[in-house]
Image 1: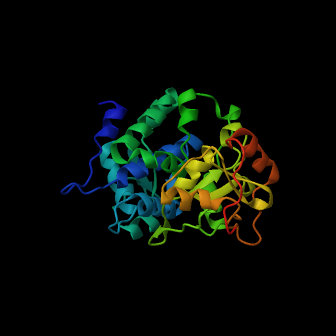
Image 2: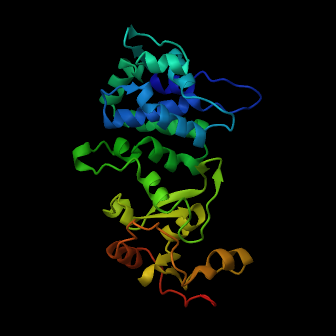
Length: 298
C-alpha cells in the first residue's frame, strides 16, 4: 500500500454520515510542521491548544479533544508516538499524554518519502482536503496549519521563497476585534469567528508582507470584492467602490454601493492602520477604474 492510499483509507469513526475529521486535521497539521522542520517532534502538551482550535473551528459541533487522533492515528501506519519512557503511546487520555511527555511525528518511512519527493506532501495534503473538507475551506485550512502547497509543488528550496507567518490571521482578526473593516460583520460560532478572513492589501505574491499594516479583517464577501478590485481604500482610510461595479438588488446596494465614502471600521486604538504605500499599490494594481462618489448620507 502506498502512502497516498494509506491516507485515503484512514480509519475513522463513522455513524449515519457523521463527520470525524480528527485524524485528517492532525495529519494536515503534522504535514505543515514537517514542511517547516522535517526532523521536529510534536510534544502533545505544546501543540494541544493549536490542535484544539483546529478541531473547534473545522471539526463537528460535538465536543471533542485532540488526544483522540494523537493516540489513534498510530494505527494507520503514518504516525508514531513516544513518551519519556520510550516508544509507544500511553493511550488517548489527555492527562496521560501530558504527564508522560508524549510526542508524535510522521513515521520514518513517510518522512523519508516526503524528503525524497517533496511534491508528495502537496498531493497528500490535497487528497486530505478533497476527501474531508469543501473547497471553500482549503485555503484557510492550509494557512491555519502552516502548509505552503505551492512551495511543495514547485520544489523551490526554502531559501528562495519567503515563509508565510502562521499567525497572520489571528493577529489581524484580533487587531480588528473580529469585525469586517468594511461592513462590521462579526459572526461567531461559540467563541470562534466564522466568515472572517485576513486579507492582504498588497498581495503576498507581489511582495506584500505579513504585517498588520498590510492586513485587513474582512468578511468572505468583502474579501472577494476587495481582491477583485470592486472595493478599495482611499485617503482618510475611506472605502472606495468602483464605478464599474453594477448591482441592482437591495443586497448589492446595501452591502456594496452604500459603502462608498464610509470610514474603515478599526483597527483598535494602538494598532497600526493600513500603510499608505500598500493602499497605493492596491489602487494602482487591483482597483477597477475610478471610484464612485460617496453614498448619500456619508
